[in-house]
Length: 322
Length: 212
Image 1 (cartoon, rainbow over the protein chains, first blue to last red):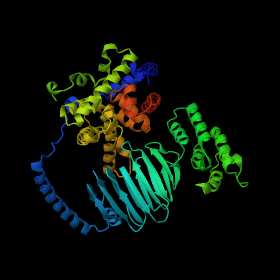
Image 2 (cartoon, rainbow over the protein chains, first blue to last red):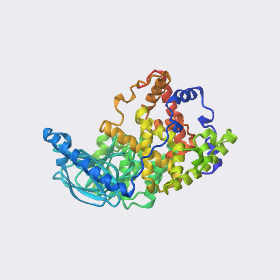
Image 3 (cartoon, rainbow over the protein chains, first blue to last red):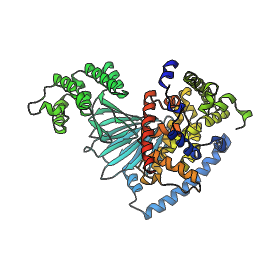
Image 4 (cartoon, each protein chain N blue to C red):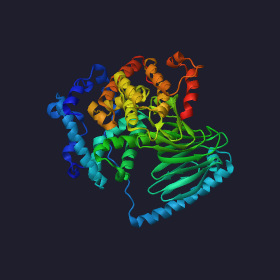
């Protein structure tokens, strides 16, 4: 963006002339404002080569004492949640830099990777530069939280028994193999290799079938799912829609998405239909029915009206191509 | 860090305050955005040197971004906890400096680390609860000014996330709209909307005496 454009855009920047309310807030918050000058940055020095051995030995000694105390404590608390997790998640193999706490979490550093057994329902593999928090494990289900990095899950169990939390949403297993990736900013990507995943957050959900993927961002939840090999035009239209700022921009992005879609992209368009407002639904329904006729048992006007039952009935028809 | 050891005394002295950045001509928006470009270049240079292990350059980045990092943290954890976490964020950043891929976006990178540290702190405190109900409980500070600040912060924390952080960066971090857009990756339009709506919601919340 040119400077001149910025100048125009920020010409009425409230900060340039804060009103009395904002000025009052700034005064009120002054005591809470961080003063770096009064708090010099203290970074513990990194150990030199000579001291590393000593530190490792000291750490090993401390770890041994902690392990002994922990073991003794666990003997007296046999049903603690951490023991439940210990039993639910078992390290099968690892390589490279890996830190493993059976009751809490798994970290993979530089060149590290590790495979965990999830009860008797499958395995997960954590790639390098990844952190996995173990949240729940047992008969009621298994749940982990991928804080960052990449996790590949191979689960063979009843639907919804296993789930991967991310900062952007919860990927609920419906019986499949899938990959979850979390970026440093908390955004997540689900790629399904086989089976299906339900990606959910705050009442918004996306059904992601085999061969499809879905992105999600913190605070926004899952976006629209699409086929991993969708056309560049459809991908571009999706991105425009995701970042659309206002009604006109959104309308243009929806038109582009409708134009770019082909029959199998009913996956994307149906999810769009579910999340659309009434005025937006007519062209989406028209495009979808050009690919798969609406069954006589479903009232078209109810689809336009956003009736949940009608939408689910039509989804079952459309899903034959997913 | 002493001024003598500062490799970029100009950036160090000027960068922390937006008002300083545009001191030559405060009324000129054109000057403001150009000075923002200058600040971005200086940030990138500091980050490149810090990435090579230059501690003085990293201290300059600390002076430049600590307030903004604190503003990000304060929307997610209590003010006192946020102050401690600022140090953790920069210690973490120093240790991970080799992973900084885009030095020109060092501020955004620090904010990302701050969000992650806040999330980790929340998870340690109350698993699976991002904002516990008691988060906004006023702290015993011994100062009416601090109590008032905490009351405003508590109200701020109850705004929707998008408004919360944008507004905190403005009011607590003292960043301009242009800087907020650059450091958060939001469009300028989004920042403007968030600031406007956030201020309105904060006004409403505070006017009904709801600091929680």
